[in-house]
Length: 362
Image 1 (cartoon, one colour):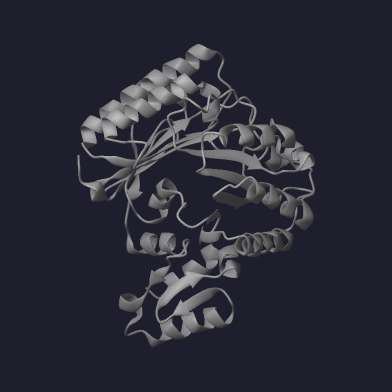
Image 2 (cartoon, rainbow, N blue to C red):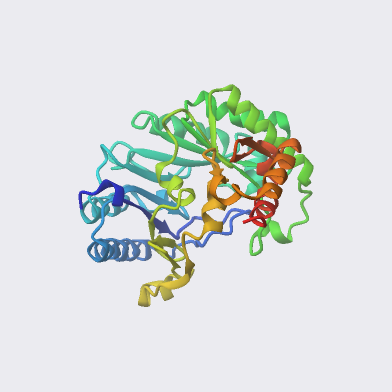
C-alpha cells in the first residue's frame, strides 16, 4: 500500500441533521436518539475496514460530509478517522483529512483528529441566514471560527450566492467575513431551487438569473483582488490550499463513498448507495451508475477547473472546430491558448451549454 499514485479519496456521508435547511436536497434527517448515531458510526467503521481489505489501496484524503458531521460528537468522528487511517494508510501529516461542521455544534476541536475544517457559513447576514433556514446567526458563526482557528489554519467557508434579499453589499460583507477570518479556501455556490426542498414550493421572491449572475461575477472579481485563485467554478483558494479531495472528482481520480446516497468512482466503474439509511444498513448494496472516464466526461470535468482541456488531438485536423472555439473566445465564454481551453467567469455561468456545444465537434 505504498504506491502514492494509486491513492484514492475516501468520502464518508453522515446523514444526520438537527433540521433541514430550506435549500438542501442532500440526503439527511434528524436522528431519533444517540443510538441511531452510534450504530451508524459502528457500521461505518466496519465498512471502512471491509473496503480497505477489499481494495488494498491507500487513500490520501478523507472527507467527512453530510448532513452535519459535527452533530455526531468528536469521539465518533475520531472513530471514523482512526479507522480510515488504519484501513487506508492515511495520516494527518501528509494527507488531507476534512470534517464538515456547522456553527453551534459542540465539537472539541483540540482533540479532533482532522487537519482541515469546512464550515457551512452560507452568509454573514442574519436575515439571509434566517431565510436559508440555518440554525446559527452571525455571532455564533464568529464564535465558532474563533474557536477552531486556535487549532486549524487550513479551513474553508461555504457561501451561497443568490439568497433572496441578498444584495451586492450584503454579499461583499459575507466575503469580507471570510477574508478577514483568514480562511484559505472559500466555496461559493449559486443557489439552485431543487425539488423536495422547502424553497421549491415557496412564495419567496427569488433573485432572477441575471441578478445571480452579476453577484457571481462580482464574487470572482472580488476574491481575485484579495489573492484567491478560482480553481473550479465554485471554489476559490489561496495558493497551495486547494481541496485535494474535491479535486479528485474533477480530475478523474478514484474515490470511494461510504454511507447512504454516497457515490464512488473506482477504475472505470461508477456506483452509489441507496438514499435510505435502513436499506443501506440492511445490505450495503452497490447500485451501478455507469462507466467512468469517458472522453466526454474527462473534458466536461476538466473544463470546470482552471486546468482546462487541451483539444490538440481532437481538433488537429478540424478547422471548423477551431473556428468555433475562436467564436466562443470572441464572445467571452472561453480563454483560448492554442488549443488549450479554459472557461471565463462568464463561461462558467453557462458551462453546460458551452461545454455541450464544444462536445458536438468531438
